[in-house]
Amino acid sequence: MQLIQAVSLLSYVALSLAFPNGAPRCKITESIISAGHKVPQGSLGLVMQLPASYTPGGPAIPITVAAANGTAVSFQGMLAYLTPNPVQDSSLTAVPVGTPNVPFAGGAPQHVGTFTNIAAQNLRPQTAAICSNQNVTNDNAASTITHAQPLTGQTPFTVMWTPPAANVGPVTVNMVISSGSSRTPWQIIPSGLIQSTAGPGNPNASAPSSATVTTAATAATASTTAATTTTKGRKGRKAKKAKKAKNAATA
Image 1 (tube, rainbow, N blue to C red):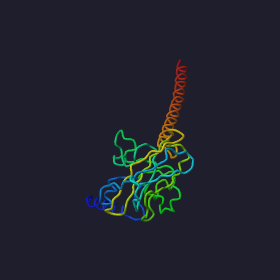
Image 2 (image 1 turned 135 degrees about the horizontal axis):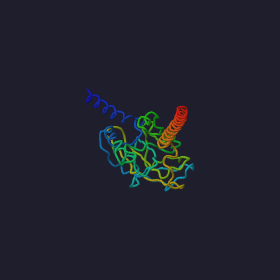
Image 3 (image 1 turned 90 degrees about the vertical axis):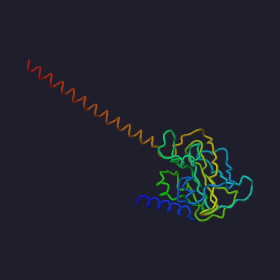
Image 4 (image 1 turned 180 degrees about the vertical axis):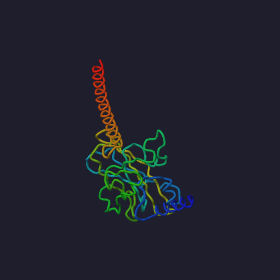
């Protein structure tokens, strides 16, 4: 029974990834995309052309996909997002969640900034529930984008990305491009790093941090412990006074 359910789930994922109205994923995972397209990743010869830096709270910057040889490459689908760390996310999603000594194993939990004017390019924000199901926090609805319908895109192809107001340090551009649906070539484009003009920054500055929750819990525990200690101290002093009074009466 479990085997049948597993096969059904894989079949559903494979069919879903061929949907023309957007990728049903919030993270770029090579094994999942391979299952959906029914072919392993192949190079479309695409590279990224990126500015060297961004300014927190500053103007939008261009993110361009181009063919390394300068030719026009046609494509129909994409999934893109930026993460506040220097590692390509598809390298992290290839590692099981919880793997020791691998920060963000299973994929970065935060996608930052906002892609702008995407509707004019037949792109759309990724569905919020899809990202939530993969434990991804988006700064904004359009922090993760995909195709709204089969694209008639050609390289060079540029999308504009507005940085977050908070400085999150260096960000990595993550993007996968598909030339079509099932059994068509696709490529996870080698990632590029964009530095912040404000320096290393705090990668958790634009989203709630688990450290904040941990700190709050620790503080609450400390407060409870202190209150308990105070109560015990008061009870102890009362007991001593009562004992002294009893001894005095006996004498």
